[in-house]
Length: 304
Ligand SMILES: [Zn+2]
Image (cartoon, rainbow, N blue to C red):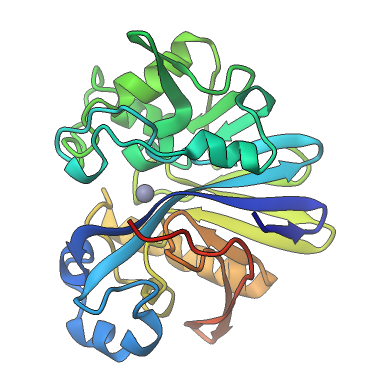
């Protein structure tokens, strides 16, 4: 597995799923202009969109080694999880832990888990099945979740998420057991410092507590964008929003802020779901953003 070096931090990509999930560009990005996708097809097909217009996506963890600690940014789908409204990922099985081992990390060695938000494809490996119980996969880790997401997705709470059915069972099997084990750290406000290199920043919209991870080390920078970006088309057209966003207008504002920040600071952008090529360099001309290059790192996993 190739690793990216960003200052003194090392970043490795662990891919759990790569392929199509049965959504066309129109279904995935409702209301987006079909001409935008056609015009961009020369660089989006086949890495990000299939020849038949199906979105291609990855589900992955960014493994970061920072200041002697092992940090996981998002934990994918998990094994054995019942997702009645998302058949493509229900009772899913992958060799995720073997991939982590291949990257040199055992579950016991993980110090920090960041959930950029609490959707099913970002918290799955928070827990694993032990007999009849869901237990934390990483027994020594502190798990970081923003309070706005924790409260929004708590089924005992007052909220009715737009994506509620898609996230059926997720809080119960992937979040509550971590809290019960005393390993959940709920953070508040605009930012949370993980260490001298990594800072979580609230970037609400996709979900109320969505966050990005800002990495700064020795003059180099990276932004782990979570689900602010699902397709590189959104870099050129930040107003294009996914069907999974709870507040699309606010998500677009957060996306624009991220793109401007990345371009102005020369930060590498590492979204949660870019298929094939995981990380983009972004430049701006006035208010227009373009991908100026892709980071060279772990090769694409075979499509399933
Ligand atoms: Zn996602």
